[in-house]
Structure formats: structure tokens, C-alpha cells
Length: 202
Image (cartoon, rainbow, N blue to C red; front, side, top):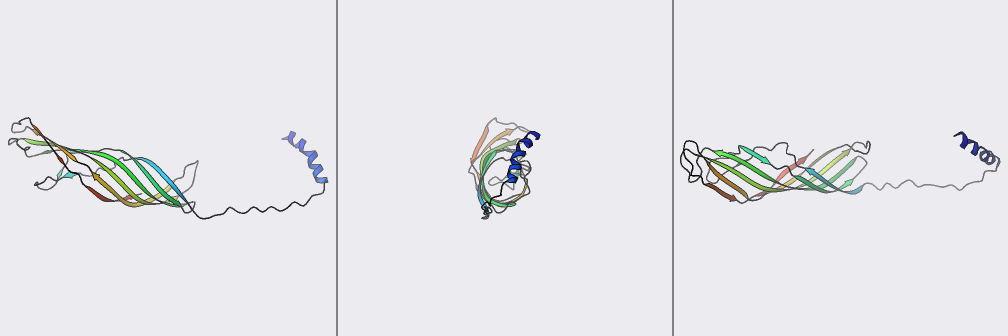
């Protein structure tokens, strides 16, 4: 710093001795603020089920609903695309579409015999089915601040998800209890269904 000051001192003294010239005034226009901006978003997620609920099935001609003794949903990856609008530095909103596929496996043990088996036996049933889900959501966000390149935010959304169940496959196996099993195993297939479900995000 001392060396630089020594170099600049003669030029500073010379400039002070010279007559100052009038320089033209330069006006810098403020940056135009034309409101918000559109943005595209893409997400890759993971459907880690927090609560798998209590799935059940109802057989034709049967009485009531039969709960699975064991049930498991796959935890598949999901992909989301969306179109959003940034209203201010704090407020934004977007419309998103999310898609994922999965599989369900469930088993139960009935108190009655399988078809064609003798009295005193029981029937072990297993079911499996694939499904797909398409969710459409409208979301709003409050961006709190940007710290070290990360922006924490609060968000909420509402929408609907279409669940499309594919063909369900059933396998039945005789379990000997107070009677003897023939050793044969049965099977059946049932057509799937699809429906829309209310969806929310927080």
C-alpha cells in the first residue's frame, strides 16, 4: 500500500494543479421492474409411505371386508414437472404434475377352507397388483430468505390424484389344521379399477 501511495502522489498533485473540466452528466436509468416472471420446475422424489393405511378386499358373494394380515406397498421414485410464476421475491405459485408407479403385495389367512378342500382346513391367500398414480396440484409458497445458496420456504397445495390399479392376481394355498389338504394350489385374476382422490401438500 505504501508503494502504491508513493506512485500515485505525483499524479494527485499534478491533477490538483490542473483546471477541472466540466464532464457531461451521465444518468443511469433504474432497472425496470416489470413484475414477476415465469419459471419451469422439475423434481425427482421418493414415495416413502408414512402410513400405509389398512388395505382390505371384498370377495364376490362374501360377507363384509377382509383385511390383509400382511400388506406392503413399494416405495417407488417419482417425477414431477411444473409451471410457476414468481410474483415477488417472497411469493410464488405453480401448477405441477407428478407421476409414479408401484406394486402392492398382501396376504391373509381365512378361517374357511379353500375351494375344493376338506373341512377343518384353512385357506392362505396372497394378492399382488401393480398401480400407477398421476397427481395434479396447485401450490403456493413463501420464500423466507437465501442463506449460503439455499432458500428455505413454506408451501401448501391442493389437488387430485388418479390411482389406476392394474389386474390383481390371487393365489390360494390350503393350510392343514384339523383336516388334510389335497396339495393343489389355486389362482385367479381380477380386473383393476381407477379413481380420483383428493390430495394435499404441506
